Image (cartoon, rainbow, N blue to C red; front, top):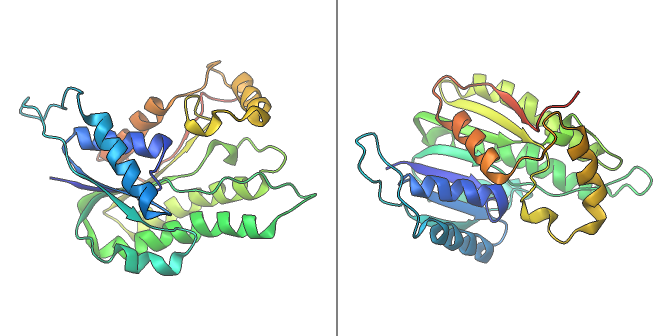
Length: 250
């Protein structure tokens, strides 16, 4: 049975990816900054699997759902990461989803918010990989989340755009340093059915502009992102890939 750790999976795409691996029979650790939120997300992922047809194994026999566990892990405090992950053994799939939302204009630049975002993704992600490097199984794969605003900035996205661009560099170095462990990144555009957008009328204009610019004329949904994640994590030749998933832009 495989062991999957998804850092920052308390809602949205991370939680959906956790449910997908549970259906496959993997044991999944879901992390969040607060233990209660992580435990709730693990329970919700388990509930999402309940009542659905189980995945089929290669022998065409149904796979039994795996076990989901919640864990407190604060990527914005990278000095605490190694201790938090100390109890865990072998990891087969590592997914780094956690992020801090930031709309930070130059006119009112918030250095604390910018620093938290940069530390979370650049230092926090790397701290998790460093802590688990010796426990990544033969044939393991790691996936880092960037974001579509790496290439499609907006006023106030300077830190977010820069940090997501840094993920591109991290994949290039980590895929070499951790070889033969595979390391990839995914950069989704706005996800139409993500809980993040619900009830946020002030962000409707940003969402509409991105939507209008896509060559497909539509936004992706969480299932699209999960499907792409599974490709990057499971295809044995997928390595060092920096995948935009945004419908295409001119």
